[in-house]
Image (cartoon, rainbow, N blue to C red; front, side, top):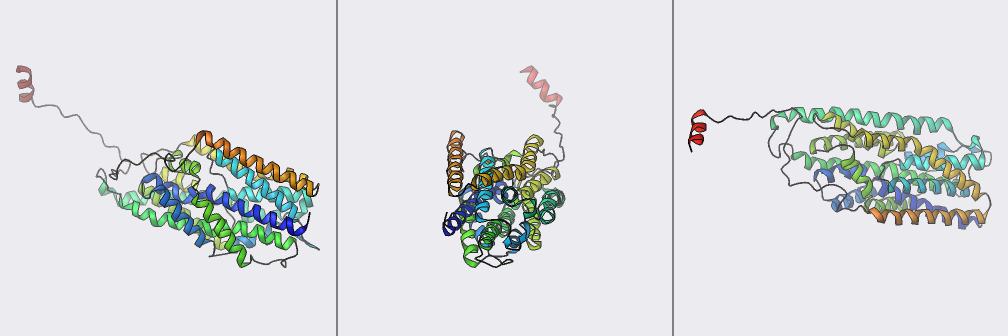
Length: 402
């Protein structure tokens, strides 16, 4: 197959992955404000789309980690070919679609890394992957970041309820946090664009380096930044309502104060990691923050069964996408016929998943339970016992005589 054609095909596939990343991760920013009624669903995803677009232009450190860190360079350049990058993207997209179908907030980032690593190992051997960088900038942040975000969200939720305890039992006592959620969720959306859009930028840059169209160590060209920013923004606007339902209602019942705390801790963690070049999973960070905020509000409960299923998905993402990427790489080694087979099978799988999702469709109308009015009664979790008032003896006697 002509090199130019395969490059165009891989770029198109990378941008489609970026699109799936957008709708897969919309929930990270907008699940909690939608659940609390801070924003209407379609307004929320539109705002997230715009801020994802803006965030993609703020940094390229994560893109450089992917394009110049995970895959080793050999005497003739990076030890991966455009065909193998194509296979890795197939693995990432398939896993993204499967987890979306089941409403699991898994990591699009780890799906991408797993697909690329599996394809690289099959096509160029174990030496093609820099496992030290994978450990330092992918695996360790995946373990540390959700825990850190959860602890921060727990502390922030405790603080929010402590300083507003005087409003316990009053309608709208903490309703002001709904307005704060507009700001905090916007910050998460901006941070998501800063971190996640760069991953596709890194893949396309890696492709151009592997094809000797860019020198090793190059950052993403401006046209790559623009195209990736647009792809993730369009994907974000499409919703991803299945995962919004899981994060908005599936893990814990979210109140405005704890939603604000969760979003703030998520944004802080993601922005700090983007600055350091850590290609972490924004989904894992957001999930950790929601769980932490649920633990921080006394009287609330975390649905640990759902949390356990999400955790299993996290563990399986990297190896599962790696296996699919490796199989696709084996087929791709057949040449143009292999690339054609990968394309046909990939399109068939994605089409089937979209068709299957229609049997249990989730949209902006049914993603989360509707908020009953705006009078959310504030509660710090302190149990208040209401004693039954006994009628006075005189009144009781009158009733008996009547």
